[in-house]
Length: 388
Image (cartoon, rainbow, N blue to C red; front, side, top):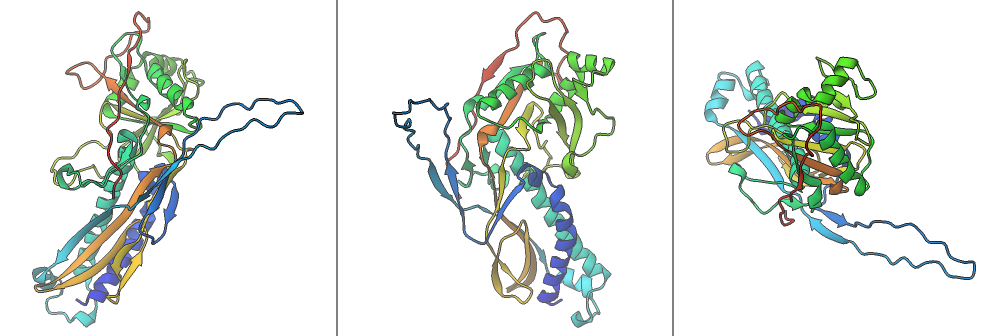
């Protein structure tokens, strides 16, 4: 089984599998601006200024001076994500027993390489989709080892603490509209665009929304100015796999309408070194963001082997290659990614942590007659030192 033949087969499967699916991944929808080149890193520029109105001056007076406020730049080297699968002697004998390598691949070998490549692509896509959500949930790009080991490669974007807050759903005056109105008000203060706003919902929020009195009333009376696009068979947002539109909603106190969404991809998330799957979005979290805000998908150079076994540098979403170790002789199929997800302004995203009834898997339905003011408590976000 010549290594060149293995490499060409891997590349063929990569093109067939990954390139057809990449535009349907959540990370490409949330971080839609691509920045790809073979350099080692990128500059993370931080420049945040709140503009003020311009004062008039008399015809004989000079213009009002506005001094430039300096920002800062940090050189970031994106961490490398890599996975390999060995094809040892036993697998080779099983795959091509009694067949000369020059005779070409049979169905068994092609199927094996195809399965390996598909598994690699699914695993890296799973990792990237979770990382994209963690940028919003944690305010940082997380690059962790097995069992969530901190490798000092996280990139902290320093989101303002006020944009990560708790909302108590238990008071009778609490409502979905109240929680979302608070989030939108905070985002508007930081100049976030309020067009095409989506809310990525954890499991408890989905249940809470289904029981919300205002939403139930809108459904009962078909109030299309409040609640639209509900469906028993939700459609995918922007043709993104697993990103389901549950409803479009605008509560009485909300300054704009939002798309209420659930993220349920075919492949559940299983963290490295952990056996059980965990939700992509924690049950008590709701992420509020606009798809119109600029976010970058950074891809940088990786060392790979070409089909002839020569080393080269490539920059792409996933870089597959193969190589052989001399003793013992083992062929490896490898897939790599060297990327980072960078929001142009991390303060264009808010995260709501819902306070639900203790011991319950879902919130109680708020009553329609308000007798108590809902509680909103700011809470900070975890911080990490830029690295990588």
